[in-house]
Length: 301
Image (tube, rainbow, N blue to C red; front, side, top):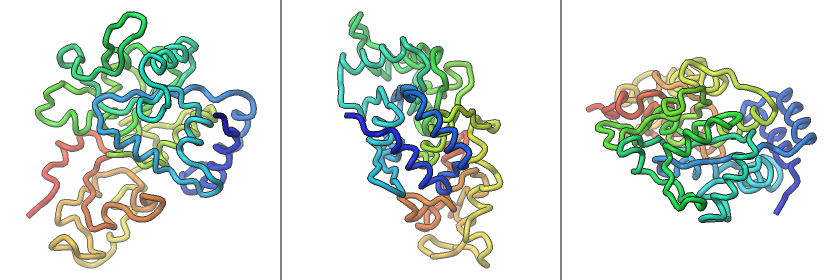
């Protein structure tokens, strides 16, 4: 099944302000999509909960009948994804090998990479050529070398995240630590679907996002748009003494908004419905390096 690749352009134009995509990028994207096929996206799952994929599946178009299938499979050319692709087993792995051999693909990794026991706590597939099990550690190490860009989807892939939390029995490492090279980190537990779409759009337009010291796109994870700085509760007099109090700042209860660089408070989640603090929950700083251990305990008496 092949749907017109104009759908992605239509999505970006209609959603440019929402996802923070400059219209000049849309023009570059239009040119790129008209000229050639989009590069394949190979999406690997390491030690994860699949929450990042669920978040991406919640992408909502602001114009037209665009869903995640149209966006990724028919437009961005999602060649391999163990949860979303129709093929399975040897057929799926062979499809990945063919794309990898051609090169020029975008490697997206979701989940931390176990290194204990030579990585055998996380098997991603069986090689149909040899019958040998392949670990996430082996797959990421091999595929990163031929990738045009390596995306770390979520905090686990970006920094280790929850799987790397103390005592980290499987010795989880971030993708950057494994490959020893540059990665584009899109953290979050899970990341907002807009952050992922924005980054894919930049790469398809032939642009390299400017990254901060943590490898995150500066336009998405800036201190200027940090959770606390843009929080609508910041200027409200008084702080909440107990949970369930609408409208008051939750800093006294352990909110980590002042330490979190993300635009959740202005972007909102679930198609602009709400966000953590808006639902009277504290920010856990899930987009930051060191989450969760560095920010624990999450709640204060």
